[in-house]
Image 1 (tube, rainbow, N blue to C red):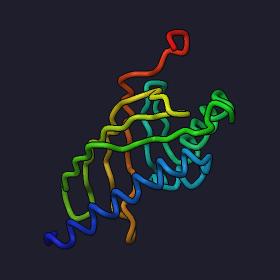
Image 2 (cartoon, rainbow, N blue to C red):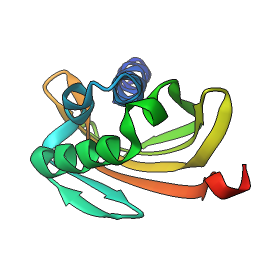
Image 3 (cartoon, rainbow, N blue to C red):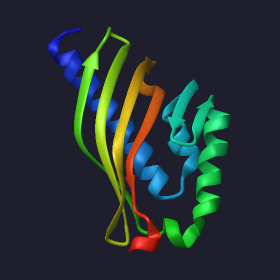
Length: 140
């Protein structure tokens, strides 16, 4: 991969990351799940979900448990991000994130990702959502 190709790939991966978070925050869960390969895997503190349908069902259950009022004003913010290429079509990523809702930080953690190139897009083949801290509502 040439330096120019690598830079383009990094931009495409960051675009995928932004779609995931932006669509999730706006309740566009189908578009968010579209950032995964068809057989992609999402691993969270709550379980492992394989394939877009299973990931979509999990995300919908999170939204249903949280309710629209709790999801209002949700902002997933990406901070430090490292991307390393295994090949021209596979990259690994480590990205810190935090979530704020209505101006209060409610979670922070890290995304540990494996991206694969599909056509001209870089999609998530595996995402481990490693949540390190959650706001405890009884302490707020």
